[in-house]
Length: 171
Image 1 (cartoon, rainbow, N blue to C red):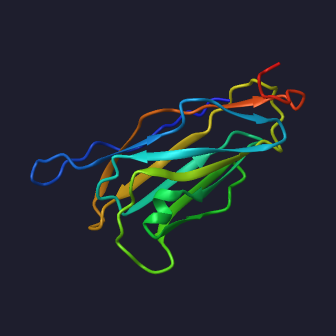
Image 2 (cartoon, rainbow, N blue to C red):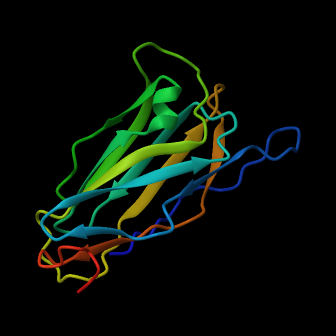
């Protein structure tokens, strides 16, 4: 299964004409193999996070797949967590980073932003089929609530494998 990431946003410039910091999101370069009916995790990494204090994202899963997000080390080190709405019937999950346990304007650093758990329990597609996992509605802000531009670096992949494939090698 291929994860395709579409980011909505434009490159922003500061009032003084200087380019604002730009956040880049990256998935691992190697595919994550998940056996049908099982679940697995892929990390969503952030780089170039200069001045970022808050984030929002929406993740859409294909039919039969369920996703959930937990905060990664970059969020927890900044004293923040993720609050996500329950998945909608169409597979949308929207998450917002918030200070935890107390309000703060701590900067979110580079590293693992979130662990994305992908559950194939309801997935009925054939092994090896490609199903997009789409990331949209991505917004970042600084301590003044100004927008920070976001781009995608490395797009990741999830490869569904047969339950008979005990080693995940496709055989």
